[in-house]
Every structure is written in C-alpha cells, then in structure tokens.
Length: 389
Length: 141
Image (cartoon, rainbow over all chains, first blue to last red; front, side):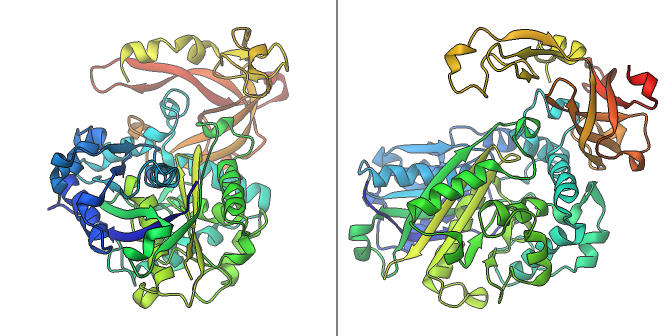
C-alpha cells in the first residue's frame, strides 16, 4: 500500500438551496476541488460519490454517471462509483477512494459527497432520515431517529450522571463556530438557555439538539503522496482511514451509551497513524444529535466514559481548550447534507492544516481527526490527516 | 409499508416469536438464522430453535416523543422505550396507558397487543406489541 495525499478541496454553501439542483452542487464542489489543485479532469482515473438517499429525496438513482456526465467527463468513460453508508456515506466514499489510490489501482480520483434534502416536505424528509434505522423492528413501532438518540441520552444520564446542560453545550459551541464559517447553514449564535428552552423533540432532546436538513456538497482530490508536490504546495497526508460496523438496531447493541463502532474505528485509526488521542488537538466529530457529539468525545478516546460532559462544561473542549472540535460549525450549524457531511469534515481539517481557515483558524495544528457516523451507530468511520513537512 | 411487507412479520409482531441458539442458549428477537454471539457460525446456522417471549420485561431506557415518526402524528406525545425482556432480548416499543412523567428505568412492563398505526386514510391498520406498566405484583405473575 502506498501513501495517499489530499491535493485539493472544494465545498458548496450548505443550507436550503432552493435555486440549486443536486447535479449543480455536486459539480460545483468537484470543480472547486480540481481547481484548487494543479490537476485537470483528464488526469482522473475515477470519481467516487457519497450519497445516502437521492432516490428518496429527488427520485434519482444512478447519480454516479449523472454527476460525471454534467461535469463534462462522459466522453472520458472513467468509472464513477456511488457509495452509500447512511449518514456516513461521505466518509465511506473517501475510505473506498483511499483504498483505490493506496492500492495503486488508480492514481488520481475525485471523491465527493452530495445530498439534496429540501426538495421534499419536512415530514417526508424526516421519514427518509429515519431510513437508516431498522424499518421492521424500530421504525414500525414509532421510532424516529431523534427518539433513538433520546433513548441513548436518557441512559447516558442514568449510567454516567451526565447533565442535560452538558450536551446542550455542544449546540452552543457548534453555532459559535458556525458563525465564523461563510459556508455554514446557520451563522447565528445561540445561548445555553435557548437550547434548554427549545421545543422538545424526543426528551431529553429538543429542537436545538438536532442537526438540520441541508443541501450541500463537498469534494476532495486524492493522489499518491510521492508525487503530490507536483500538484499542490500543501498536500495533506491521509494518515489513517478506518471503518467499523455494528448491529443496525440500537436495541441489539452491547451498550447504548458507547458506540462500539466508533471505539473500534478510532482504535484502528490511531494504530494505523501510529499516534494516540493525547496527540490530537483538532477534530470534526459527528453530532447529528448533541448527545452523539458528547459520546464521540468519549468513544474516540479523548475522555474516559462519563467525563466528556464535565469537559464540555469546563471549557476544556472548544477554541482555546485542550481539544478544538467542529471549527466548521459541526453538523448542528454547518449543516447535515447526509452524503456530504463526511467529506465536508475532512475538507475543514484540510483547511485547518493548511492554515486556510480564516477567522476560525487554530494555531499550528499538525494533525486532525474526522469522525462520521451512520444511523444510530451501525457504521463509524474515522480519518486522521496530517501535514506533510 | 405495503400489506405483504407488514403481514410477513405478523407472527413475530403479534406473538413475540423469537429464536434461541442451541450452542449458547442466547435468545434473539426478532428471530435470527445465525447466532451473532457464537464465534463458530456453523454451529448455529440452520439450527436456531424457535421460541416464544413471555412478554414480561422492564424499561431500560425511555423517551417522550413530541415530533412523531411518520404515521404516528396522532399519538404525540408518546413514550418510546427499550424494554429488556425476561428472556434477555431488548425490544423497541411504545409504553402506553401511563403518564409520561411516571415512566422510569427499571419499571416492570408487559407486552400488550395494540394498534400501531394506520397506513393513510384507506390503507390497512397495523397491529403489534406495545408495553403496559405492570401495576401490582400479582398482575406480573
């Protein structure tokens, strides 16, 4: 296996993009990623697209060749692969593209993630969002995705004494960061009181504990690290790319207050990157629901089980703390276009490592981690990126 | 959900039909064709034994749902719970006939046959289990 580098990144605005179609945002992200490197489209071996539910959202399957086609590449006849892993479709596409380049089978690939979620009414959108849980044994009894995370949150409070305010702080933190990201869905700051006082969705979770439905796309250009300097002055090494899975239904898991797939993906990733959580000061974590972000801090290895809540309250997590997370605004404020999230997280880490994150730049990071989750935890994917010195 | 898709699981949803691994004796709901606990899958494959849950269990976690899942809009607020059954498996289901504020972990419950939801204005009515609080020691026997 050879080493793989990220040579370019591109991302669209995230939000309710009424005037823009799925193919438009997919193409924009891909073009921006290519433009930011010195590659041209004729250099590409393949295209990978992370997308969760285009069939349900816009009645369009077969989006691999569709995006390739409208990118002007139909005549190149290169492979175009659509990858689905629920809300982790983006990181899964990256993991597959990484393997293709690492193996030597492909040299240069674009890997994108895209979702167009606002072309359906809210109720329909919520039903599609629930499609990553077990339809026969969870949803049929009245489970929504928020309710599964509500069950997790309740048990975390029971087992670990976690306080409602502690996970509410993640939403405040995300919005604070999102206010500095021009691509974020939400750029308004919110207060702890607003999160606690928001309408209940699935107790203890309220409206402001839940990430929004967003349209958006993001893309990366990958290539072999050994020739990376020919195509960019600031290549970023993919030091680890690891996937782990688990039982699909929450009720079947060993524990509901630890996401085992995250624990295992993180352990494998730290091993591959030959590092450990104490050396990481920058991460983008999957917080589609605030409690999920709190648990990620524990399951990724940054804090012992039950200690992340206090770390959030004490300000140890956040700008100026020991660990800086979700400078993009996270899923809550940057937005949650399902297939694009995993790629956008990595794009933000790349911007940070290159020193291109503008007002949200952290000082001199050498490494960063991105954590993308599908469903209530059946898939977790962890990438570790590092600067090339 | 189409009629056939719902109908083909009615045995499990109406009667709590489960399965047991002949090797490790672990009970699974819904029934599985291979035991995920035993490391040698060949020992349980095609040999899982059908069995029945008693319906008795206790609440492991719970949430009051205000933003309903698709088709459950008329039932809000409703309590959704993970229920640890006496035989071991954990089930997802609603807790009914109770003030949501009363619900807590460890509460004894019993599965009860109820209407789950209607498939639109003219579709079929889906039935299955929900959970009722066991209110006195004698009622749980």
